[in-house]
Image 1 (tube, rainbow, N blue to C red):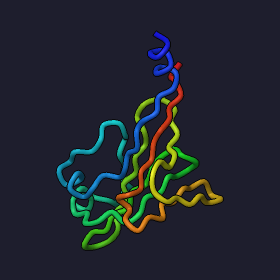
Image 2 (cartoon, rainbow, N blue to C red):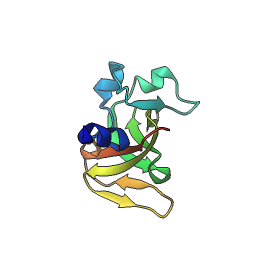
Image 3 (cartoon, rainbow, N blue to C red):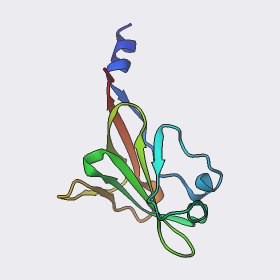
Length: 123
């Protein structure tokens, strides 16, 4: 009973990473996140991603930004946890924190950049 109560009070996910281009092309993004792009990014732009090249946790852990190459210009895909008040933190890989509240993954392969989220219970 105590374990169930603790799970309700504090939820932490295992390490996640930005979706691979194949996952994006198959439109199989995780339902644990709300995915957004900027207003100038079309569906065609998003479906033409080639390679993940950078991962950043933004605004002191509010959301993660995944940066991809395309044939034309880079595409940024943002993800914020859908449940409650959550904070993203680096989980695996090499990360550098900035004064502006970003954590930037410095791995040679951005696919090795993992993050977790911790959520406060909703009241």
